[in-house]
Image (cartoon, one colour):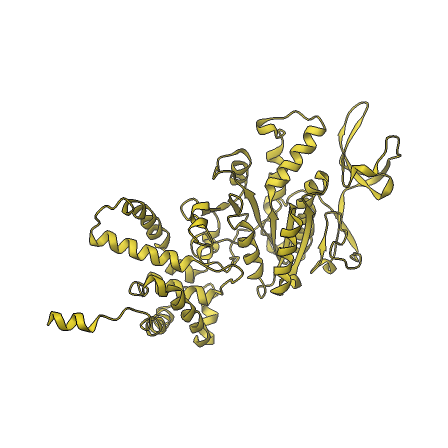
Length: 465
């Protein structure tokens, strides 16, 4: 069972169904190269993948073959693509943050190293953009990244690789790719092969981030294979073990204990929903397997609020404990304030008369929304985020007009260069934000934001005298 089989013309397959009088095999290539009566050989080993430091910066397929036009990847070791997850006693708690460079995630839905955080939303809502921004933000964090494209369009994969190369991220990234026109067998093994590569580096004591883009295509490829192998279908024609194929994949992501060198594997699986239905079969399966989810709303996307993260439906179940103390002391009530604003904003659309307190909440909420907006491929450092979020929660943006918010934030980002070296170090440490540092940041922010605040009209003041 699951032994690698060798077919003519350099094709491989995996023995998957073993019956009394026949063997059902998953083919890892084009079936057009096969003819009835061709000889099949046993290899005596299971499906495995070459693993080596030379993989870093390369684009390969799930068989380890180069897809970037370069030479064959040299390797000293192969690992099976299906490996048992580490035992409970080999694991440690999630305690170190994985900074995504996105304010809305790092402040409100923090991710820890060793966590599994699902990214889900309808097609074309920016799911891959969040994952790529997270990879770009690891350039000086000593985190190795693995991007696994499952059944994506070739143009989409090419765009992702071009962005990674342009920003210098391929220096610490491995891309495992299968295209939409590849055999379903290749799509099925892709995430397992990518995870074995990531585990190789994790077991060396390194922190690794893996992105599965996306597991909807993976589930469909497995459904296709199961139906062809005549396995009994279940709900939505998926086979009965569809939950297990994803749970055994994602359980391999963890933070190892110090006796096993303390490496970590953080997973960002991506799922595509249909018509905002997050209670469909595959999304609910993955929500129950992962440690939280980031939900992207098409409504917010259409309004130009990017990243289109729906804060109300998004949650991080273990990342809060790993969040840097500097964030915790600033963003305590931010999620609540933003949720209140969203609820009141829907009422205000009916033309209801609002009292001053309600208007104040709505005005503050609009500024929170503007502060959480961010350009694609422009991740922000921790000190830059802290400066903007502290100014926001302290009410310094309240007097800044909405149309000047973008410029005001850009000026606050520049303020980061004037921070003392000791303060920059303490912001990313395990220490709480000290009152002295808080006052220093607020004083600098006040001076900058005064330039953007609306000045009272002089004529209007004279008329009142």
